Length: 68
Image (tube, rainbow, N blue to C red):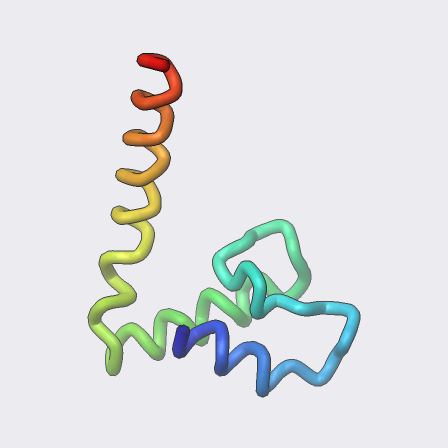
């Protein structure tokens, strides 16, 4: 929520709404967003768990989809 809020309020372009998916590598300013999240992870250590948690979620959803 903190990352999305920061990107929403600091974005000056209405067309480039990176707040919806801040970890996307397909949108513009990818390096800037990832750099900002890297700096914020020093103050918000919970960001270190974001990518492993997303991977675990996708793995669990894939296993669930195969079973059903």
